Length: 535
Ligand SMILES: [Zn+2]
Image (cartoon, rainbow, N blue to C red; front, side, top):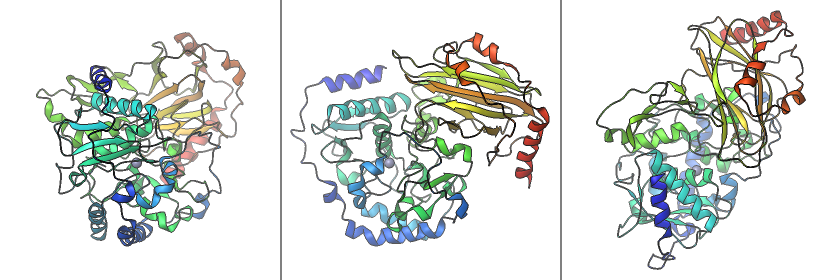
């Protein structure tokens, strides 16, 4: 909070209104598309060649869900400037593009999402990011940029300071349409433009553009993305293949962090679609609605910036953190914990809001039903979030059947919805559900714990599920296919809609044996699920 206030104070200083700043060049002055076309064609062709074809039955004619997104994607907001930008919103210099293409031609496919090429560390901002807020920024864009700077400053060791006489600085401008930035610090630009035009004012976008300026590329351009998502080439115009290019290890460093479909740097599933259908399909279909969120940076987005800026070196003492957490560079005595986890060393649960909506659920052989309901409320302070964890005895895995969800059906499920962390690695964003389910979803954990987070703003969020243990070897990937359960009793939702915001009492009430479910059917379902995996 201290940093936020510091930034606010800066913003209170008399505005220069851009007076004394150089005239801002237009994006069309900075990028000559004719100079880049040839390289883009090469990169587009390489991308088409190296992106596996997917089975035609995977290409559904329309999106699976009827999304109610009110907001355009970044690449849609930038539609008029697509010819000037890389991957929808990146201002890429000819030299930088050349490096990426050259690397692709050399075919390196090794471990290495942050921008770390041979010019590193001149591509990062140290000891701080000098910035100017240009008078062309709207009031909304300005306050959102301040919030984005406050976020990155609070959660990483990166600092922002109003520019004094630095030659290279970040110039936040609203002079043009669209939301775009350069990746990393570019000494050749001097006044490096980060543009926040009309429609780009939400925090999910300003924090995304600022993450580009700090050094992150898009998540789906990681070298290993073909292991996590399929690209539907049939829905992408050939001239946009270039926007789906993978950036090689010499130009991007993932710092050993896992691919995060829920990253604020990940494309939406319908990005650059010619017909509105999905252009990106998650290999783990449970993760499809996790993709393309606008809430803000995830645990791993923040972790990557901390690694990129070598923030861990600021802590002289070393502490241990559980569940993939790491030492907080702003307070070396505590850990930064993955979503859902908390406590000094991340071995506990994240604090919920209200504080009563949390707990540990013990899974056993007998299937249990569990409901969480966050009722609509007008005067909400911040985000309401219920945090539970299902635990199975060591060596056992957990089967969860999600029967019903009420949420706000948007790509990325970043408003009202539920998230389940099924993988043993708790650093990655989990499977999210926010749209009305056409059928119950059967999920199987990788290890012996599953975190469940139900999130809501003012509107209602609801989830009803059943869980039990299953005696199967661990560490296989969670289910790759959703299975329809034939004998699920329809739920009487009305019964639950009158529940008060979750409390211990509600938890106990619904933590019951579900006798009406035929146990044989259930076991058959689990066997079927695993025969698919084992074959
Ligand atoms: Zn972007």
